[in-house]
Amino acid sequence: MPDEKLLNQAQPQLDVVRKKRPAEANIEPQELGKRVKEIRLQQNLTLEEASKLTGLARSTLSKIENEQISPTFSAVSKLVKGLGIDIPQLFAKSDTRTGSGGRRDITLAGEGKARLTPTYEHKILGSQLLNKKMLPYHTTIRARSFEEFDGWVRHQGEELLYVLSGSITFYTEFYEPIHLSVGDSAYYDCEMGHAVTSTSTEDAEILWVTA
Image (cartoon, rainbow, N blue to C red):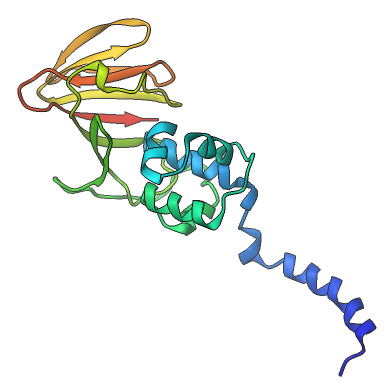
């Protein structure tokens, strides 16, 4: 049996070697909160909407995103299920590549990753690609009045809205509501409160692109 003193002397060397393993070097637990926020924003979810989907309190989600607390295994499981992702996506390093890439994703008509909220029915397009610079989605507007929203919708980035069918009222925090019909579009800052309601007989459909 090896001498205990010899084992103790060897242990630090083993630790050094272990830290250099590439498989472990790519895992950055301290960025978990950043990844949670990144994924939430990619899905165009407010903290309130993500809270309802995951079953985690809004305050808990905020603390996780701001690295104020470390999520338990139970919380991670709720995040994965509620956001419709795999556990590796939570720990994947953000894509910092520059230059031209070769990625491609096709979304056929009627397909798209469904994401339901009380006011909108989203179908996320290009959902197989991670770390996209923009988020395109086809949305059916279920809301019929501004009162159906729990306050203004706000999130980071800029957004393009294009009406595909029906008609809508587009509400923005600093402007008067405006009526938009098929072929009309709007480009705006997402940090400004905004909301969309259907005004046509059938629920309106729009294309949204968030960047």
